[in-house]
Amino acid sequence: QVQLVESGGGLVQAGGSLRLSCAASGIAFSASAVAWYRQAPGKQRELVASISPRGTTNYINSVRGRCTISRDNAKNTLYVEMKGLKSEDTAVYYCNADVPVGTTWFRYWGQGTQVTVSS
Image (cartoon, rainbow, N blue to C red; front, side):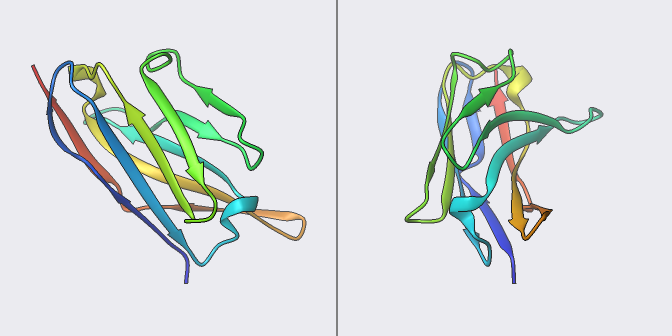
């Protein structure tokens, strides 16, 4: 059974920082492309940051310089650290994994963790 379990969300003051974790099980984590998405109220889900199996990272412009995505393949865990949080960072943050199975890729999602930034 595939599980992606996020943790670390909560209420943070503007300018503060937090680290989200995503513990994966049931997948070949080290071979998977993993990412963090977020969805604010009334908005579409958007990609925040991604990291490839080889460690190549990408960030959306609005978080670049404030955000660091990382992975620990030994622990099957994905992380994102965000600093200088702004009210517009308020959203539900989702862990995502694109898992290779043969010649096919399967996409999995976590249940999400709420991040609320107070001004």
